Image 1 (cartoon, rainbow, N blue to C red):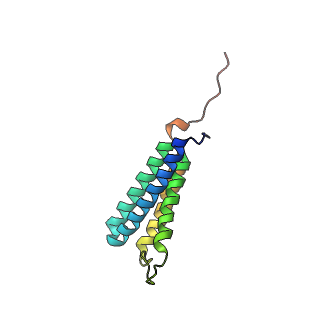
Image 2 (cartoon, rainbow, N blue to C red):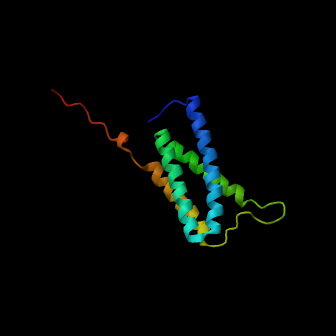
Image 3 (tube, helix red, strand yellow):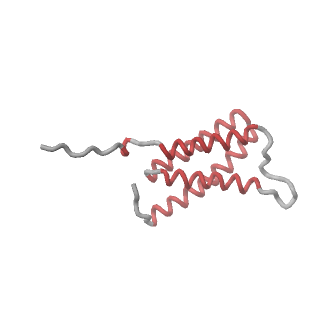
Length: 126
């Protein structure tokens, strides 16, 4: 299903990219703060972002853009600061669980089929 890139669709994609960066940044910080509950909360927020992007744009492109923003926040938070330390430390299992869980959720939301995407049957001869 290919659709034309209209200005509204491009604006929605840019908005999803920014929302992915914000959701990812908040998720990375929450996972480090409250490990078991924070991980679940962050993964639920990612699921909401990816599923909403899927429903908004009607395909996997929105999920991919949201996941790119989420991963961009991981890259930006993992870069060492001028002081020599990291804002996002990779100590503990929570960060790896969030990275793997978010990737799995993104793949699930990108490849799921909705009720609109049923196979079209051929017309029956009369």
